[in-house]
Image (cartoon, rainbow, N blue to C red; front, side, top):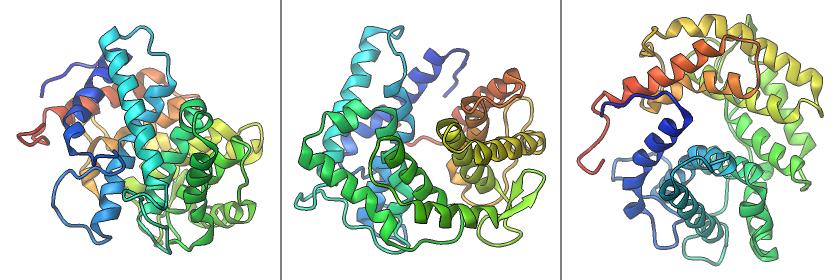
Length: 309
């Protein structure tokens, strides 16, 4: 697929083009997305919930933005996706529903997916929180809050609980200060200097440092700078340092080094540059924009689509 990205409208159209073929693959209540039958180690139900949630990293910000300058047909499509996901969240978090996502347990893959739901709720509080019934809000909060009752690996996963508790805190819901402190202590103990962390195991340094630890830290600093100025200043300072190394993992045309775990995340590799702009770091925004758009274009030229798109 050959694309040229210059404006936000271009990016919106590309995003919708990417997710449009998924519509026929959702469950009747829209709580699960079954893309294919390749295997995962954590079970089919969690995998289908994962499919549902991952799309929200694009949809949540899209719903929250000013889309009034987009074509009317595009605006209607965006609204349709919002209704689709409202239904999916209601079904997925209702314990008596046949499409219930299931309870969260120790080291559960669903912990990884919870912040996509929580952050979208934070970005769109009216549609994904206030417009729900009392019981639906109770179900949604109860499902997400299970994160605070279970153990998880001592790696980038800790940010999934940090992000969920951040959303609770900003929305005025009960949140776990104890778990947030525990998680940030683990993040801090992973810092090795000059803007770099290791992820889980000392010496484990790859894109997870970028698209997990720095990405979520920057989102946190955007939302929590007034409540926690010192912590957020440290995150911003470290991410600025990190930029001056990480930028050299990319060529001027946006192509990145194929290195480390989970290269199937593809253009997530450029997401730290987006988060740096979102958090307002003092960097060259021309460089940030160029690397993000060129990286997306480079992936669109690669054979990453099947016959169904």
